[in-house]
Length: 144
Image (tube, rainbow, N blue to C red; front, top):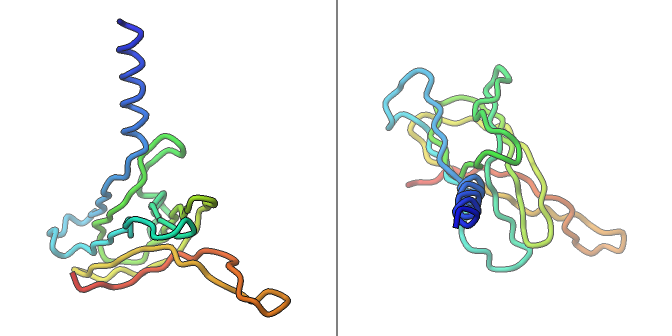
């Protein structure tokens, strides 16, 4: 019985550690409505090649890592509430076959809403066919 309880506890901790969580960075203590809100696109994939993003790390303009997460242990982030400014974000873009970390530098305005997503980029193959070559992290300002 004790072995079963330990196993269930370990599984719960492991599952909780893999979940995405919101992240708030507000060092000046600004009111919540003044923060930039970033939602990471997490909708269901239509196709196996569709990429989904999760935020892994965030750095400010001074190069300080803000999230404080540990690789392979800490949760990733699916939403940000962040003070206006310029930040470097590292996100994991993954589909059913491939995954990798990509970075982008973004300027967030006060009281604005954004959507962060992975965009598949295409290039030309030597025979002239369009082929997927890499994934880029994109930011789009939204109305809600």
